[in-house]
Image (cartoon, rainbow, N blue to C red; front, side):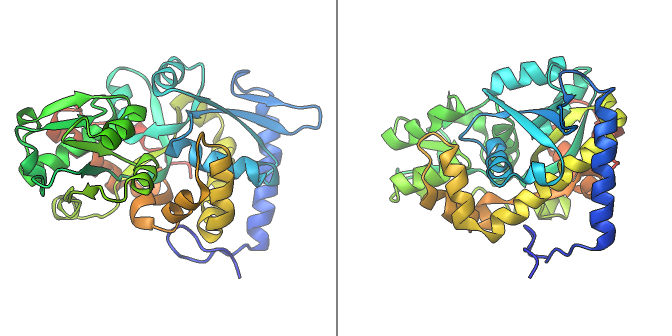
Length: 342
């Protein structure tokens, strides 16, 4: 039986699909000769190598690359993906400068903000929808408004927090009334474990690791139901693959191959949680396969949703609208941010 997709739909492979895939690989090898030397090279055997930048583990950006390389899914598509992993700060510098033209840790709001700063990028496809959590061990904190006058540890410079600002407002919490304790994403787990703040905003995969270490800690209702009431959709595109627009326009076959590789990796992951979690744990510092397996088996937390950008234009528009409502974004996004070639 064909493996299930991340949304539960079975996948079928027709002869036309396989022939088209082979043709795309041939075209990919041909375009590599005129591609950017930093992004595409061709080895002695004629196999194209495509360089991709992502956040280092533990992060959702490093999640599927571990599966892609462990299962050699890229090679099955006639391509070698050469992943480089770095910190968020370095990622933003390297991708924004164009040193890397492909980014696999592309937060949708971050890409919109890049366009406001004059960097012409496009969101190719989505990988994960938005998830965040606020955890606390304080018995006096039961709802988000209870955080008024209390301390909240958060990575305030991240787009995850920028999205949380919208949900906090819908729940009736003015974050100016809370003491925000800014931390790096890696430092949030420590803050929660040691109780150095009254509450901590945290997301996956750190959230699963925290719950495994401190099962007594409570999660507040972030109010995700406010999103469909406001925007009419439950899907919140959050993290995916982005590229510099000129590069994507010049290499549509590369983009198509990237989508197929990631789509296959996602389908295999949700169909094989024990094997997938073992691969991801091996590539993650202090990674624990049982914790990761439970995360993969819980779509409500992992929220893996591999979709072409052109198929989720409305959902992306809702994210941009929320960014404008909170002041994170000032301008309407250019139409070019939604890649239409898939």
